[in-house]
Amino acid sequence: MSKQDESTQKPVVPEDKKDKGVIRGTIKYPWGTVRDATVTAGEMSVTSDTAGKYEILSVDPGSYSVEARAPFTGYEVTTQKVDIVAGEAKVVDIYLDFEKAVVEGHVYDSSGKPIAGAALSGVLFGKDMQTVTTDENGHFRFDKVTPGDRFIRVNARGYMAETRDFTAKKEGATMVEFRLQPASCRFYGVVTSESGRPMQAEILLMKSGIVVQKTNTDAATGGYEFPVLP
Image (tube, rainbow, N blue to C red; front, side, top):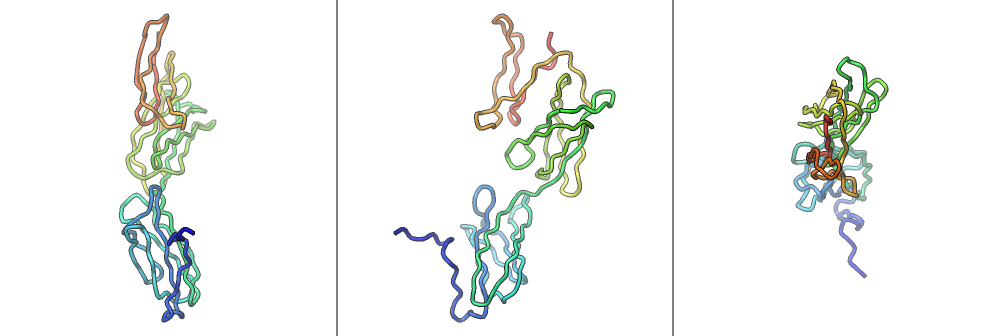
């Protein structure tokens, strides 16, 4: 019979601490465990070890908010509720997620008329591509954005694509507005792998076996376009 993993074993309260409780667990984030995270319950505070594990001993019975704070920026402070009973120990594993900001705005044409159905894409939260479309008022909104320097690329049928760099704020919503210029004729699209991740590739536009135009996809989004065609 294989040895049971330490994290799944029932925590034990020492005999001389039967009137107290214990809180222990593991601090995790999207790519594994977090060392040196600060974990606080009431007035007691410890740091996680190299494996992301922590243990708070001699906890008085009662209700606590266990707070975990990453040792680096870009992650939310996360809390979990736990009730401690004398002589018992509780396992409280905490997952740290990215800080979140909101980005919203509108897409208009050159005359100020809203453009419905425009597609806006960007690597805005973690490493994954997000895409939304505008409503009938040309409005769009991203609810999960990591604060900091970001970009959004907008594509709308019949208009030139546009990419906007901006800084997402931690507080409140960051507003981004677009005014697109019409394109007489263009091809555009996105190249992805089977798993949906953007790919860098050379795109050739050919007529009668002759290359008319060529371009490369955007490394971050996989998007490409031939803005103006004869």
